[in-house]
Image (cartoon, rainbow, N blue to C red; front, top):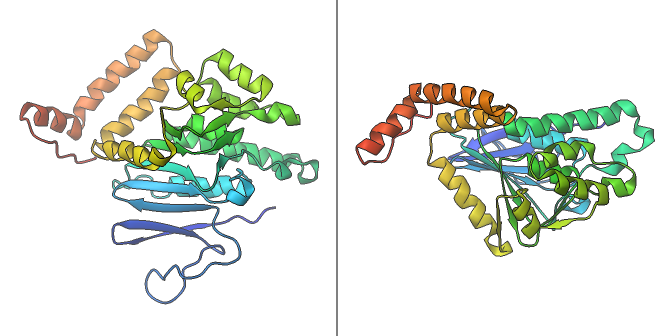
Length: 298
């Protein structure tokens, strides 16, 4: 069984930091310690939260940010930590290096690891992908470079995806004898069926331009503008009510799985529920009084 990296979080002023025990430990005295030394291995993910925005960076560029079991668990820990904190408004997932993520680590998928381990890898990955859409805050993928297989799945699973014009997306598992069946779940819900199947059957990458055209990403920008544009979207979300966004996000995914009539029944009731929220009434009052709303986020 692989050794699992554990996440620990602490605040320093308005910033939230995290480290992985055995990988990026605090040293020195004091309540929080100081990040002053590293062991031979860097943390698989780096997490920083400031002014409502939590930025999680995949931090294993030498392995093309492969979604090994430990990487998946590290990312999941960073996403779910203190997820109900009202101060958290949006999560950005980015990556170090020229590859956003190359997908699963194929070395973990050889027969020597066994069927049970393989099941753990895919089940844990599925939980990560579904949790991205079930948590109450929006998740934005910031993509620069190549996103393949489960890496493409990660992008497709996020609520919003902003990519540089250098980004490319592929599901090439068929070329190594492992069809991208789990990435197909997210991909097939993000792009038209025939586009998804061409990507799945051929393994050929598509450009950021085509990804934008087919709906896999929300926006394409020059590489030098990628972080700024992603942050702008996150900051705009931070200006809204957390409780209203949480209700809206949950309802969006529920209604997408229903037929038209049932979707309208659900959302009509949710609109009534939305009006019962404190922030629902505050927003209407602020609009009528021509002032900025004062969100309670409750």
